[in-house]
Image 1 (cartoon, helix red, strand yellow):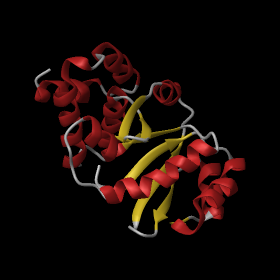
Image 2 (cartoon, helix red, strand yellow; image 1 turned 90 degrees about the vertical axis):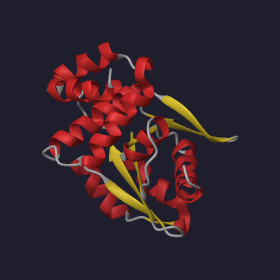
Image 3 (cartoon, helix red, strand yellow; image 1 turned 135 degrees about the vertical axis):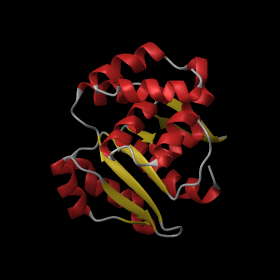
Image 4 (cartoon, one colour; image 1 turned 135 degrees about the horizontal axis):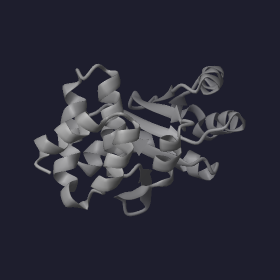
Length: 190
């Protein structure tokens, strides 16, 4: 992870941890850390955020981020994402409220920690769950995002035999992603 991205992410993670708000890093940052590196200018996080957290989170972040508490409240009420912008770097951090599906809960309970620096450890979703999430995004985007597909195949190649394929196939079946998962596994050589 480049220094600018780390500098945008670290204060947010420290604020989330300080407020006991569970989070997982997902998206391209997770797939780059666990798979093949690619440039990205935003960070996606799934957060177990309650309405009571919003004003305290904004206060903790201080003036280092653009944050719209009213917009955050509205997004949380709809169950949709909202973003923060790290003002120094203009890096966007997209926060996705934890979903209500069983898969959302199960995948959030699984965590992989990653040491960004000697004293800064962050929580990622596991590679299996990042792959499944990216497969969902790829399908929702009508299978047009070459970046998503490269991230998926890259994760599969790098993680290889360490992946729990039984877990992935189980959830791919429930999420109706079996053909896509099998195609990605074939392309990766697994």
